[in-house]
Length: 116
Ligand code: 5GP
Ligand code: ZN
Image (cartoon, rainbow, N blue to C red; front, side):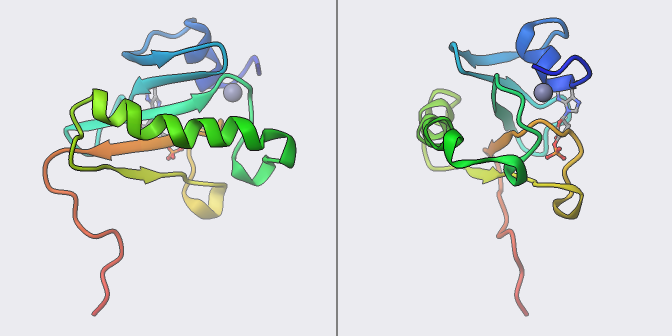
């Protein structure tokens, strides 16, 4: 836990959010500014700034999150699939420096990379 981290505060319940899922290790909640009909984030309760700070010791936690993502996506109605996005570091466009997996779907999800 980090005292000054927005997502640590959300995971603790100090800042309200629309919760999707919680257990002892992870927390999921809807994005305040969704880019699609369904857009939520899955975070570890452990404060990790980004994937750039992840180590081998976090492998089980990260694996658990990847396996949980499709389960939560289905529960949110994304039966036909979803997009995951993990922005890592300033160079990756990350804005909140607590590792999070965006889970996005519903409506029209365009190809992420357009090639001419
Ligand atoms: P990033 O750009 O770091 O990958 O994503 C940060 C995400 O956090 C953005 O999609 C933004 O809309 C979301 N966000 C920022 N502040 C809050 C907040 O206070 N509550 C919630 N639920 N989402 C937030
Ligand atoms: Zn944090």
